[in-house]
Length: 213
Image 1 (cartoon, rainbow, N blue to C red):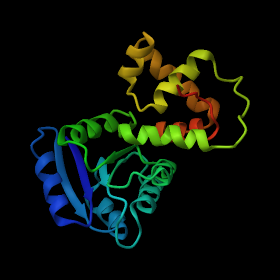
Image 2: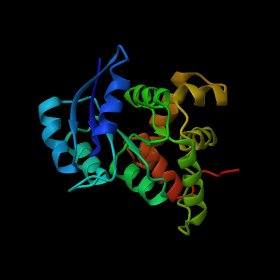
Image 3: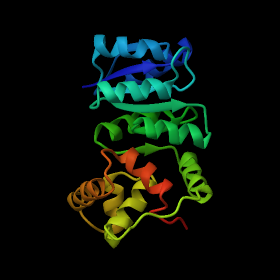
Image 4: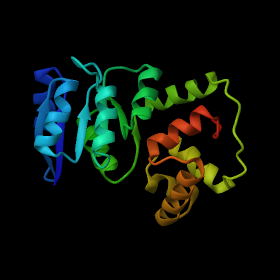
């Protein structure tokens, strides 16, 4: 059973999300928070496996709350669910440790699927936000670091990772096994010194380690 904390300052949205998630046999809403300041209190009380986190919150915003959660509860998955499509919010959320970034126009099926994906260790990014990543990449002026440590296959895996694909989707795209994808991802993490998929995406985009066509 995936235990979920819903963080949003709008009662109607919290009620709607709860109704959607409680239709799933493997999900349970164990708590709600209406502000960023309330999140850590609810974390202690409810010990959720996953948080659905809005950004625009009273007090600490969702990005600040995400950073605090990830520092104190690194095994808790944080899925941002917001109306904001700004690339700076996306990058800040991923930098804070968010495991996914969805927009509120996502379908209920997409939200449910995204929760399951982040619980499996995958990173989820709304398709329109993937385009923001590409735009951000194109605007960067930082020079590339030495890429010699990454093999050609690792660069391919990293490129698919930035697109927001799951391990299974990467395996299918590159015609390799899921196990091989996991091995490549672990090696990539070690070589670029990151600990999560979202951090790898941030690093790859900022340092232009992948190309977009």
